[in-house]
Length: 250
Image (cartoon, rainbow, N blue to C red; front, side, top):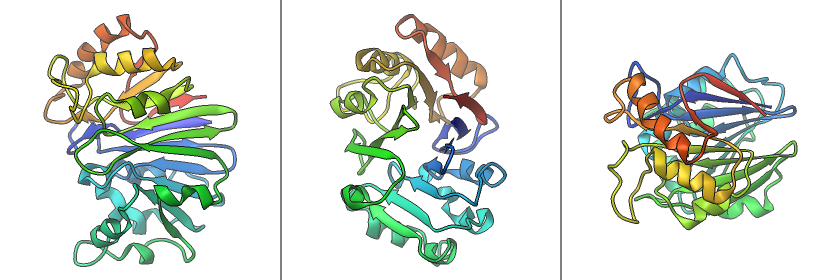
């Protein structure tokens, strides 16, 4: 199984990266986590003869702006799209004229839009658990059981109990790192910084964590990412600085 961080910027694209998207290629299917502009890069990577699933953490534009490239990607099999509970109407209002093409016209016939409350009755070829996480708009984290491995996706969120629960014992946690070190204040912060991410991974007993969603206005250079993450490894050594197109084999 290969995990590829196709877009690692939060807020907007820069020369350092595109907005949020991570691809998981398993033996029998592909999972796309969020749909920033990084999603366009799935086209040469996905095996379109196998099912694909698109899991959206929330509907902020840096996680959804790439949805209008669904026409370009051209999925061949019906696509299942998951949004946080209560957000189906908001999704359909976002992905339609006059903003872009109607989402149902950009994906194969039979594609489905589900919210996280409907997953218990959905037929997925992998285990999936979701919980709401800490952000100003409805946002869910995902815990995925795939081929005997556990992958947790946390974007966007501040440090919270549900994030720790979802990350518990995970083989890989994909965690947002939107803020610079020392800038996160209070228990209701909507984003994390490297040392908070490291503390979360340590508390959860995770095996490794890759940081992504580096705030484009804060992390203006790749050197800034490296310098910010390095000290946090004293807390959790298996901390990876995410960059676009990084591949992690599990």
